Length: 223
Image (cartoon, rainbow, N blue to C red; front, side):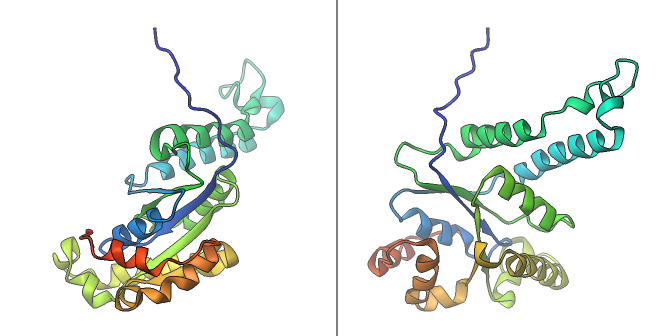
């Protein structure tokens, strides 16, 4: 018999998500974030949470379309949709993600993940939903020189300049719309001079330890 082994409920966590595109240096950036005591920023999950967003949105849209009264009638083809507990859906999705994707440790204060797949046309709606699921979530937007990106990995296999430009335009527009909930960093800048990350640390509310940052940068990371 299956026994649910849920983790202890955590209401004391803060959430941080790294928003970027592939081959931008985001793995190094995550390493820098994880050097901060109490931070646990996971790697990519191939946009798994967007599927949960579509699940929740479908329930919300159908509940609104059918209506509460009709959705409660046993003779209606959408019987039950009128009583969908949308608030509970958000809470339970947060629990699911914490238990499976983020898996915070006892000493974790801030958790989240970095992802390169933020190119959906519903990006702003999706991020608004993430902020509902993870109250107080903040978003660190990372970019890199396009010519360097286009020479790296799969970007070099064909003409992807317009796709990269569109991806960056989307995440920069998102950063603009989020205001203080977002902060921008540029890979080429902080690799050339780690001290430029002081502003990011100030935004995070964390002390800046340049020696610790440089120590992370001395280790090879995928870029």
